[in-house]
Length: 183
Image 1 (cartoon, helix red, strand yellow):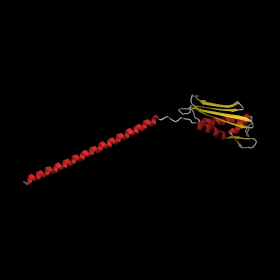
Image 2 (cartoon, rainbow, N blue to C red):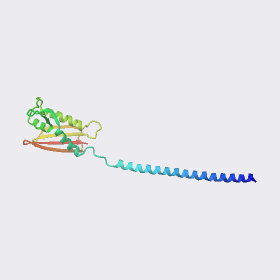
Image 3 (tube, helix red, strand yellow):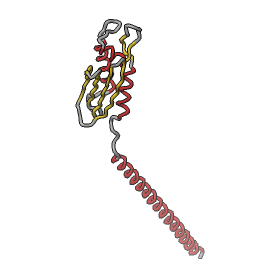
């Protein structure tokens, strides 16, 4: 009889253990399915955000304030040309009028040549157009008393550009500076 009871007890114990194992197995499967569902939801959300960000309009490559700031900056730039009267280095703004008046630097260099080389170096360094750059071309024009004094052009003229104009006067002479950056 003890053997029968032992068998019954063993079967009952085995049955309880099997039920516990099955329940734990089902819980584990449910947890894995839940985890996989969370991963799928996160992936879908990321794809939606990625799609929205790729469709967002691209920022223009050149802004008006950049072109205007460039003109203001190069007008204040001090060149390596000294004024004959007060021995100070001339700013580009002063050099424009000295060039118009056919004056020379203290070291006898032509102010127009200094102006041309200074501005050419500044524009080429600031607005690079070679290769796959966003700026495709530029145009810098300086007019004094309605006479074109300087024209620097480089690259391609496209239909899209940002431009700025600056005018100022000195001793009854008017100067207009136009700059366009093509993109």
